[in-house]
Length: 176
Image 1: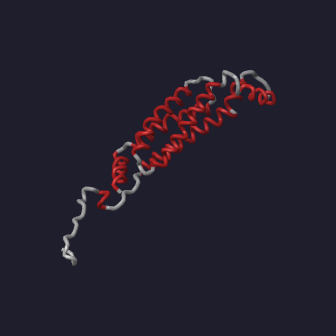
Image 2: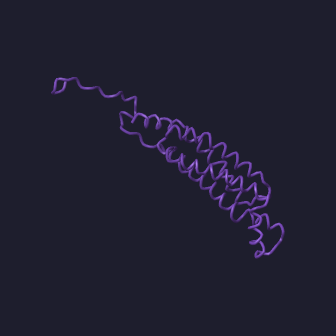
Image 3: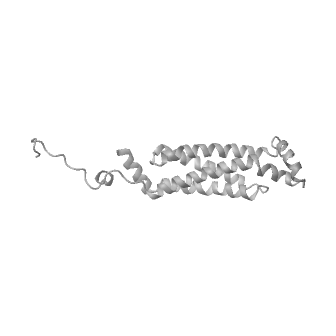
C-alpha cells in the first residue's frame, strides 16, 4: 500500500523488454536497410538522369562514327526516335520506383508495417525492371552497373526489414 491507502500498480513483467527498458533503440539492421534503400533510389535516379540526358543518346549515335560536334545535334533528334524509347520507358519506370522507395524510407525508419509491406511489393518489381534492362547488350557499362545496384540493393533491403530484430522493433513501436 502506498501513503494514500491504494495498492501499488505492479510493473509489467520483464519478459516484455520494450516495456521494461523504455523505448527500444533502432536496430542496426534497420538502419542499414534505410541506408541501402536510399542508395538504391539514388542508383535509379542516376540511371534516369544519365539515360535520358547524356549516355544513351551518345551511345546509340557513336555507332555511326560521327565527330562530337555532329553528335550533339543528332542526340537531340534521337531522343524522339523509336530506338531511344526503351530507355525512356525504363527510366520513367525506375524513376517512379525511386520516388516510392524514398517515400517509404522515412516510415521504414520507425519500422512502420505499411511501409515495409509497400517496400515488399515495390522492391521485386523495381529489381525486375532493372534486371531486364541489364539484358540489353548495347547498354553502356555505367548504366548496367547502376541497374545491377538496382537489382541487388532492394533485395538486400527486403531481407533486412523483415529480420527478427526489425520485427521486434516494429512491435515495440506499436506499443508506445
